[in-house]
Length: 619
Image (cartoon, rainbow, N blue to C red; front, side):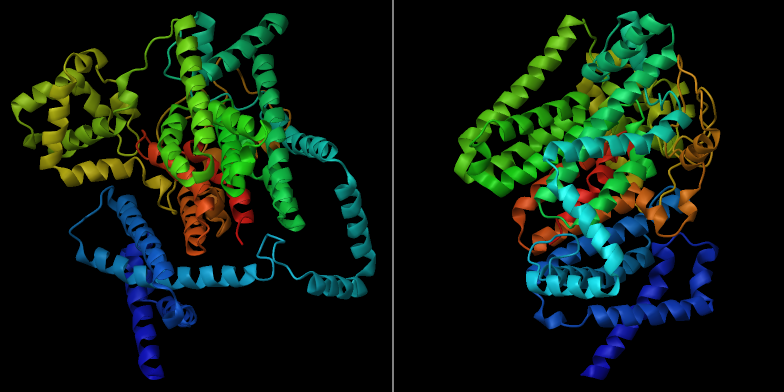
């Protein structure tokens, strides 16, 4: 029996090595693995890992194994599809070897995921990785005494500092943390002065400057950004000063949010060391710093979303107790309101989540329904009120139709002959022939900007039928068109270069479009620390951090998405169903952005902001 099992494990490892060229974007048709000593090494390591992961397989619950299998299958598909999209800008759905590789690696990933969940669960018995809950106090005290005997001097100092810190009031700790974050970000602010004024910043500013508003961008952010810049410009005569003041105000806001997050982690008894690591992460990790100093609406939206996730966690944890006072429901409502006001997709995601939240919260449905009703009413009143007061025009339809537009453009680009003359004439009514020369597989902006909204509004059913009939004839082209504008959100190894060749105010995008970096007009970059400015420019516009193994994955939205999926799967495995609501909200936000024009870190910034909180909940 043992020999048979070893043979199966060795065969599975061999099949896994055979399938690697379909899972990794390798050069030379996979010969780097199949015709190399490295293939033997990988086979041995894979065999060992499979052997360890298969231990205790008979004792595993079907429920947990099933969840791991679903996660492993989806991850395998993401890898094989992603590799194909990177190589050929399309998925060959008829490639049997690709599907076989995905099947083999589904089995391998299922074993690994189960083993990882079991290991984390075992660690929970002694307090988990990051949580102090469940820890045996006696053994912990003995370990501390032993450690003090070896390194008595530094241990005493740390204990003394810790006691002083814990002895401070919550307000003092918060003020200190806010000052700490501001000091961490200050050098970068000076380096990129007056801040990253980018991602529709000029468009929003011009709306306020010309008093010609639309609801294409959320009006609260348009008014806040443009109002501050114009007010400071009126006082100082400098647009840069206005941008800098907005950036500083956002820095203070973000510092307050992160200080609150650390306070909540302390309340949840997350280990002190991990809280220190989280503080350093918020203070220095480049993605966090980039968007703290960025004028785009994504920063405030994500901060509000992070607070909403904490409120959701607290609500599902406390149940009826959550509604005994007014502060926690008010915090929940305000977080949701700001989140929805700063990005339209936040409202859609929260609207979908709300019925499930009502079903789960059995003991306080009436109170929750009232809270949700007030929150949504406030959002719609505020949105419609601002739009009416400022006579804001309605947003154009192409933002909602970005995927269908890209799908039609792909069919036209690669199979125009399949379209009849009547279909072409109908298509040209909403997309001029010239528009298709701007087709780019990874971003729909070049084509959708030509979309004729007036023509579409006259007969949307007619054009809907065109999209549907074309899709029935070209279903795979439609899938590939959608995959190409979204795969960076689910394929870990993506190099984000969606704007390659696009010229903006101060540069032309080349190898990387990870972050916008620049200062749009009327601002101008006036760096006070040029070398630090150059470092952030390199991370934003060049392949830099992507060359560092392991670290590169911390910059990958695709990798972080699967990390969150793994943690959500673990919560399901542990039957911690209440903790699934914050994950569900993140997933719903993710669903809205994969239907967007392209893939950029700014759209899923919550994956970075919420990472320490989610990891701290592992128990």
